[in-house]
Length: 174
Ligand code: HEC
Image 1 (tube, rainbow, N blue to C red):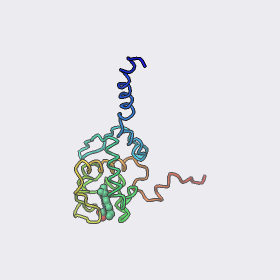
Image 2: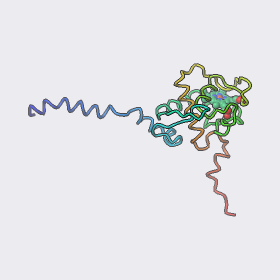
Image 3: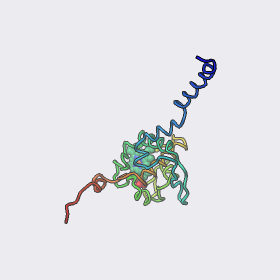
Image 4: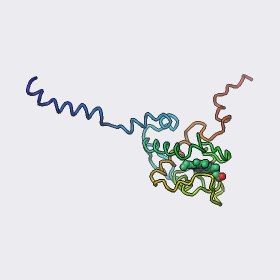
């Protein structure tokens, strides 16, 4: 082994290990989350409606993956695929969110809602949804961003089974 090589070997090894372990790990993980990359069509930062004034806020794939995980652990029991099993009329579908008073089609409105769930007409508190006042603001926002983006993009989000299958039904020729 030449002395030059011996001198550089540790440096080369260090570089190699940095290349192998460093880099954009979280983002690679989130790209592996197929639901977020395919169904929500999020592979890089996206702008999501954030308030009722038409404001937008940018969310990264990592934040949406966190939102999805929070949804899975806290909401999915009653809202799998965006439906509302205990009360199917009030699903998380975009049209439904838009039709609530006040509209729930933006991150701030969802955050407010999960802090204190209100009836569809906004007149009284309801107790059959899950009050998540223990979530940190950032977590609640990521969860809200996940719900809004899913309502915007995920195919068949919050629609009843028969409706959601319509796309795949082949109608006989007339
Ligand atoms: C125990 C079942 C249950 C759980 C868990 C639950 N929800 Fe709900 N959710 C409901 C019910 C029932 C309604 C309809 C409330 C009503 O009667 O107005 C609802 C309504 C909603 C609405 C309003 C939908 C609309 O169209 O206006 C949103 C948004 C919502 N839930 C989000 C969440 C989120 C986010 C979570 C997780 C943090 C969650 N829910 C957890 C049962 C649940």
